Length: 419
Image (tube, rainbow, N blue to C red; front, side, top):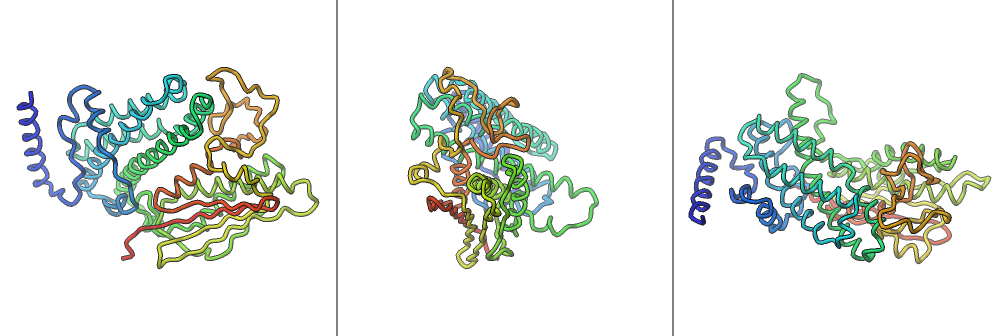
């Protein structure tokens, strides 16, 4: 058996070397997937892939295949890279779910996510080596379907862990969710960069006028990302949501170096900025809506330090701040400053359904729920925003002046070759 496997490995590598030499993929080779990793039982495949510690994804790593449109050669190499990188991360999530206490892992919401990771792992490891553009298109179509299936993972996990919080400590839940969300960030970066590059490359085959915006995008990466511009876009949505929920909304003041740009992934910043503005607008509206005076504005200040590849965005409100006790637990997944309904039944069985975030039922009695979305109450906004900031080496810090307001500092670090 060992001899057969050794022969298979030699044959596979020889065939791969010949194919690589012929197509000159040398500069874009993905990590090789040994043939034994794609054969044998599902358990053996899982053991192989979960054994490798995935490397961190950097902006430079995401940009390794260059600016679209990509040639067929590069698209094939992109497909091989994605096919090699994702199974390791999926296998580790499957393993993590298997280590949960039985009653937690059996929760319908958590079990649903486990099954999604398991089926996605099986699907992606079932694809043979991508050696043609047709193979790339088939793989990309399957990858797109997989990304869609995982789009609600975070609110579904939130639902599950809220229902199971009596069976695990806050520390255990936080550790599990931190690892799960960091893993999810890397999976979605790899998958969505693949889909974005494929889409731009496919679109470029059709005649169309060139746009400046296209020239600054490298898949998911915006080479001239404007934090001030993103804040303005998020403010429009949050203001409508706040006014629909409270009848009033504060204004927004943008100051500092509002023309500053950086190299970053805009969708991460859009999530962070939306969450911070929701917190600031809600706190301001709740504290001042009964006053006859105009609501104090939410002030966002941008400061850039290009020599250090740093940019800081400060969100300042006069919403009363957080008490010292609440400030200490502000980054806990179980914490929310929204006042809960005291008449709500607390003990309704281990898997009772609770309205939460994006998966709240249409009949929710949450006083902050609205067709536009939920203004508050999930408790994942700050910890998730901090994980997004930390992923590329940045940070998110909160400073509260209890009785007055709150400052939140978002520091971005863009490790990007200046040339």
